[in-house]
Image (cartoon, rainbow, N blue to C red; front, side):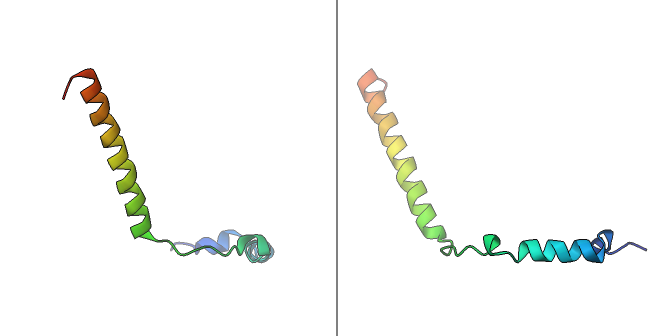
Length: 63
């Protein structure tokens, strides 16, 4: 039989882990993740880099 992974720690150690994880340091309020905003900024960066590469290509005479 396989052992329960939590049983690798003693009860005392599990209590310490729970105390550590429930401390105020680990309760940080965060804004919700907004994938559309990330996609928008990714699109902006890729467009700008593409524009810069086209501009440099035209300056050098490749396009």
